[in-house]
Length: 232
Image 1 (cartoon, rainbow, N blue to C red):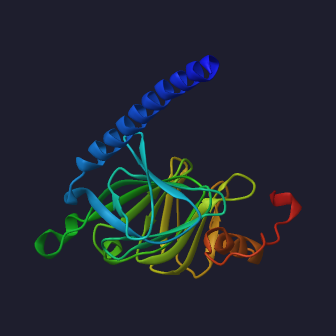
Image 2 (image 1 turned 30 degrees about the horizontal axis):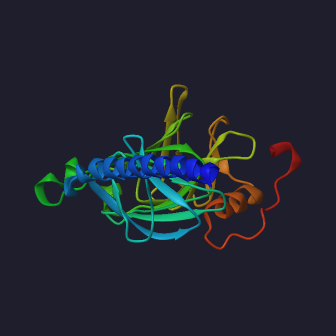
């Protein structure tokens, strides 16, 4: 009985400390997001399969449909997850599994200030499929990556990591893409036109590359599509 009493006393102390620590973390997370105002709001989670987080100031929050997205958020998806986000100008982003996507800046104006509108995002890893809203015809949308910056001009597009580790870009349809880095720039205007950044002039992708890009962000993705051995 004495041994059990000692054990139970230690366990109660541990539980008190654990509860206080957990409560403190919850309060910190609430305070951090309590400081975010409606002016920082950039969009809303529309659809989610699997797990996803938004991280701001090193504090995470679990995402769910209807959850607001804010400037400064890093959106992060888990294994086999898919996340669809609608930005306030109507732009849709679909993130594939194990993707990290940073909302760097978003401002959307109407009327006389419409030309000041802009959206800046960064793909840290993974893949994002998108269809632009009103912003693309105003200040435009830039998606930054380690290998290049992609300027979006009223377009359906995909940007993501390829199996060989390079950054891939494809223009599905619409107004085109501008891709630039310190080595130069290229434009994508034709439907299905795309390339890895490490390559030179843009060209129509092989069918397997288009299939891989669609699979990487598709909510109804089946088995991994064929990828030739030389591209793995």
